[in-house]
Image (cartoon, rainbow over the protein chains, first blue to last red):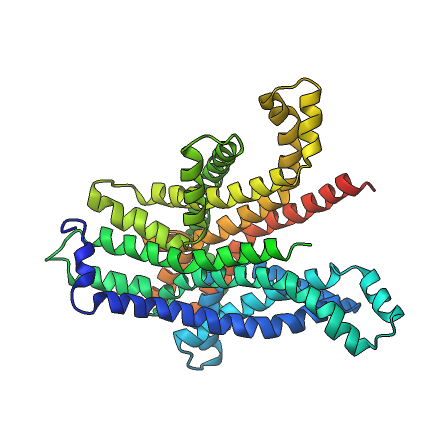
Length: 225
Length: 219
């Protein structure tokens, strides 16, 4: 343990600080996912409209998000917009804006996919049974859409958590940055700290994302028709 | 926006793009190889290896590339394994991509009806022949859109290479902003160069997807 450098983590509040850093990543992704779900549902509904300009706009938005690396978007929002518009933007707000921008596109596409995957016969049967449009949507379409949607949006959460590791690049102190600080501070006393600390960070990310993605797989299998 | 500035930055960005592309394609190639080997091990139920492969896939699918690179580049030297930044980049990308490619390929294989396997066997093919001539071609065809999506994902992920001191597009942009504060020019070039790199793959992706849909449902 000594020469692997894991002991560094048990000195003082080091491990708590590391967990605190991880919480920053999780917090940003949870906020962004919440925003993305709300906006994404709206966008998904917009995309199913038979309106040419709306469809083209949504398409362009989707392609931008799909092609530009999240890191580039972060740079544009954090360094670019602050420069052009002269406002002050904290790194955390910039991150939330970028991840919501990204998540809304992904979510919108998922919502669109699950809405159009509901067979037409479901609408027709419900109408044949005399349901009004509201009832039809509430009791027939919504439950089926949500079932298809939930596993996919859980996957989005894990992808968000993984991507939040990028916020380090715009100067936020999250788990990797804390890890670097701990390693720097203990350079003399335990020169091998880098191994132990980065190994633990690796495991921490895995321990957070793995159960979540397992849950998604489980739900997908259970609700598969 | 100053055209002179942009012109003087162009060669730097071009070099960065070439570096990103070089590491990118090595990583993607490695990802294909790793992914294919993994799926073969799972498919043929190779004892022990199969469990390791499954663990590897879960581990690398559930951690960010940035953390994987930090581990490869900063942690491994402490136990005596020293890798060059460029090699770390390709290896990290290959390991991450291998896990994704394996998953895509596996679901492509799983989607092939059992009857294909049974028919091949009833024609007297052994398991290897059935895999080689019947299952594999169909699985590869149906996984191609997924492969291309993974390739785009991997090329996008190269943007974290700057953290292990590789002079990629991100590094160049950040460096130039830091030195000359020509933020708008730098970011515009950054976007343009990423488009040059990723737009062709994206267009190829949607083209292939359309072609495959024709192949499946007829015209």
